[in-house]
Image (cartoon, rainbow, N blue to C red; front, side):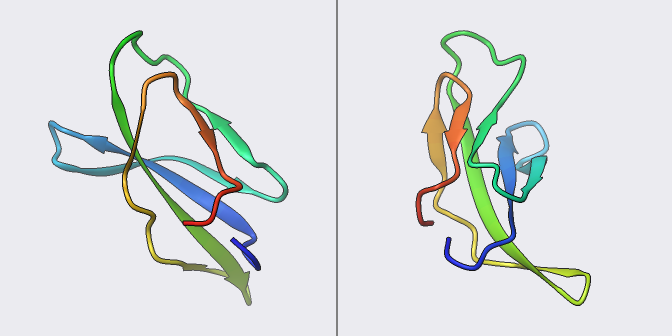
Length: 79
């Protein structure tokens, strides 16, 4: 996302029935690898870009949920 200083990656927890923060990637990171994924299990991810302004993180609109099986998430696509 143009102007973003970082990204927050969330996964959906079916037991808690809400998104749980997996990682907060700042700088030039453009990929995130979800560790300890179970083979064949489908995971739901949501990404939110943010921009730091005066030390505060201003979060953008969450992406639509994406469903991934291998746990590798690219962050360079627009949300």
